[in-house]
Amino acid sequence: MSATPAIAVRDLSFAYDGALILERVDLTVLPGEFVGLVGPNAGGKSTLLKLILGLLSPQRGQIHVFGEPPRRAARHIGYVPQFPGFPRDFPIAVEQVVAMGRLGQGPWWGWTRHTDREAARRALAAVGAEGLAERRIGALSGGQLQRVLLARALVTEPRLLILDEPTANVDQRAEGDIFDLLAGLDPRPTILVVSHDIAFISAYVHRVACLNRTLTCHPTDALDGELVQHLYGTRLRAVAHDLPGPCPGAHRHHR
Amino acid sequence: MNAFLDALIHYDFLQGALVAGLLASIGCGVVGTLVVVKRIAFMAGGIAHSVLGGMGAALYFGVDPLLGALFAAILSALLIGGVRLAWAAQEDTLIGALWAIGMAVGILFIAKTPGYATDLISLLFGNILLVPERALWFMGVLDVVLLVVVGLCYRQFVAVIFDEEFARLRGVPVAFFYLLLLCLVAVTVVLLIQVVGLILVIALLTLPAAIAGHYLHSLGAMMVAATLLGMVFTSGGLALSYGPDLPAGPTMILLAGAAYVFSALVARLLARHRAAQRARAGG
Image (cartoon, rainbow over all chains, first blue to last red; front, side, top):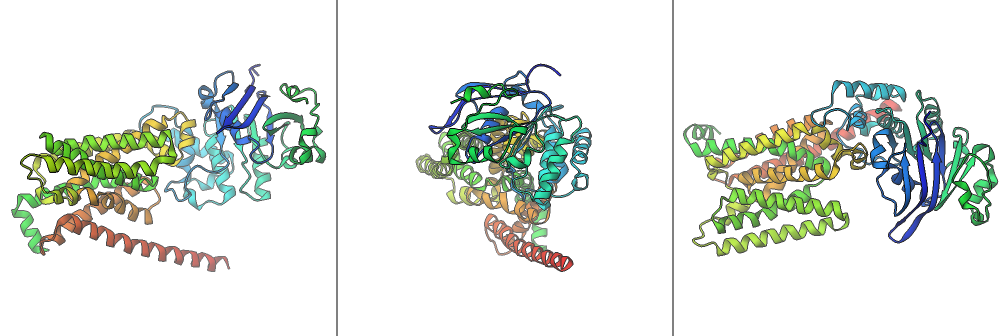
């Protein structure tokens, strides 16, 4: 594995309409890691993802993805949004949606090619949704749609997979299925997944980053109920984030 | 109807009208589908109405009004698109303003045009029987431009219409294709103005594609079906209007409107029927 981090966020601050959303955030994710990003609503999770994806630009600090600025690295990233950015009644079949992940590869002109179709079928098979290829996107259940969005992100065989609450709109069994699927991907990309369910994801991820405007990291074996209460509860400011080791940026947050 | 077919064989102006309708239908099918699916009918309406400014100015300065229309349509498409990309909140206000300002400019120019002989009503509501042969060639060229651009960039258009954020992440120049789409809408508006005038354009642009969308679930199929429906409405409206000597444009629009209402009701009933069947099968 190369020594270049998959994600390197340094001293990042971001304000939107005068409100400070992210304050001096540091985060390093190494190639091959499976990192969970948790935190309360409006804590800045989706904003951080959008910055890493290059959809937003930081006012202060730096972001590198595989050593490149986010815009340049976008071709290495697969992204699964929290809410699908399209109307459900759009007249399009699942296979076409997945093949869209391969835009930007091959010539810029022309229609969906045979190789795009085959890649889409492979990606659907990888998420256990090969039977859905011909279905209309609006005819899918919440869990099926989530698998299709995952296939769209995987169709380019990304080195980094970023998921924003991939299980917010599915039932508990489908939630487990999707995380099992992520853990079993082969080859497994580096994964950064946002979740509100800290207890659930700690069974899967190596490390949890807690974001509530500022960011702190914890190895998963240090997670317990008290921490969760601290993260979401009123005593948040009293937490001494004092964990050594795997999170190079954590120390900045000592108070 | 037989009287219409008989006249069609004998009169050049009717043949020209029929061809104009068929040529316009290609634009209305291909671009109309994109407009309906992207839900930018109001935007298309704004572009259509602001065209009067360009036509009026062209008449005043003695230029071909079609060129004036094309220029005004593309200018307002770029203005509306640019504002939408820069600050989305003001989009509908700007479209409304451009809509009215374009018409006001056009009326002023027409009022001051020396030796004014243009029939304002035929600009607003179209006069398909007066389409000159030169305009037919112009329409043919615009159709070819539309088909080539959509054919070459089909994947990019679908991606930008379907999910702008994802398209941006995949490196598609979203702003460029969004503005290009609006320019295609502008070209189509100019095509359709020949047939039904600028007030009625919006109906012919959206209704055939909307009817196709009731039953079809792929963009390509919708484009083909909407083109065929557009041909049925323009030719049918022309035929229906001939006997009682009605204006052709409004007749086409009423035919399309009636078909749309009927189709919407049928689609509703079908959906209810299917849901009931599924519930029975499930219970």
